[in-house]
Length: 340
Length: 236
Ligand SMILES: Nc1ncnc2c1ncn2[C@@H]1O[C@H](COP(=O)(O)OP(=O)(O)O)[C@@H](O)[C@H]1O
Ligand SMILES: [Mg+2]
Image 1: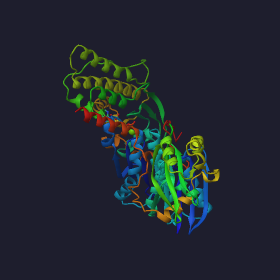
Image 2: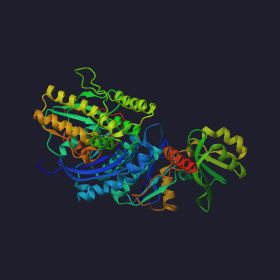
Image 3: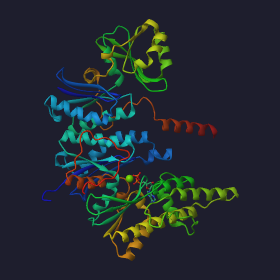
């Protein structure tokens, strides 16, 4: 690249209104996130209509702040990248329509980015990706193992057959009476606990890279039910530790087996659950032993943000991908390669 | 002065560019097509038609609702973003008042209506006085039966405006008898030129960042939450 490239990223797929400017696809110039957790907590989960109402309130402020922090004018930008899907459709539409209006007003090209491609490219903001690369995506809506042979090329090798890992965390947290979102609370309890309940691990078929977490969730519910029927009381820390161990064991084993089978040069983790301390420690230990570089972005880049959308958007933009003024929210969008 | 007007509050879409009191171009449609697919392409086409650049406009008017939550938000998001990035003033106008503007010069009450499902409507009551529209009642969300009872008690002709009037026509005639007047179809779609006209006449400039739709209803989850809070308080 002879000239520096600046891309504005916009992300509104769930409950964070976010905008960011990224330079040359890997350098964060600004990264603004307005979270709705405060407002959504009282509902015990994200209410789509409430999320959309917050986004429309925040969107121009957040974009303005991202440009101000970057000390850039719209005319300094090369393109706008926005999350096109998957996500809550009403929420996606706010980011998409703001991105289109902004691009139109300033004569900029627009690129529609897959949210999970964004989570993967969060890693590009920390260190260059090396291929072949294995990505473990674990978030509120996704649990996937993706093989990348080059930039913008994705091959799904495993996915959840029922609940996503983050979903399982949130559901179990609710069973234990922990506040929303439950992942971080379970993580904390698990790390502090000196004892763990023994819950089953869902290995599925021996050669499968798929996941399943709904059985584990039911096991937790049954365990609590049984103890309470006998007039006892569950120890939430012991349950949290047992649940987390089961999730972490399965994620770690399948990731390390896939890394070996596909002979990858780098393993990365991405998505909200990649913030989990137990999971990080376990993957770190395994890949250190195997001498494979394993990376996971800092927590602020694991949860939803727009820098990751700008990073993935830059790779798409460089590959010649362009969106149009007809871009619509795609709640069930599939991750497809933009470079094959 | 060049104005851009945008109405995506309900199924119809209307976009207009008005220059010094002349409509340069206006697009009106009423199709079951997502506004996210149509709104920006139509805006882009309109600018090309009138051979203007986005930066050439001086003000933006948008329909602020009530209506379809998602529909209103698409127009409001586009209008907010354009106003902010182009540094132009933004004006929000009631989607119902825009409909009422189709019926100025009517001698009686003007009742714009948008269906809100389950025998509910968003509606307003307006009157054309001294060359402008005056709101007789605040826009709101009503059970159609209650609204018609109130209108019947006024014992005056009422002109019902809006695409969704047809859904309730029978009931209107039953309750208001000959006082129920149904607007002919050319007057049933909101027009962005009227939106601009109202904004020019009586619009108040909005704080662009803080501007949000007038939903006229709290979200269902919030209503349930408030009800639960009250119950919890009573139980204490
Ligand atoms: N430390 C943690 N341990 C486990 N789960 C976590 C942790 N931090 C966040 N999460 C989970 O991550 C999910 C949110 O991640 P995010 O990437 O925003 O998901 P999505 O975008 O798919 O909704 C939630 O389910 C939350 O509970
Ligand atoms: Mg996410």
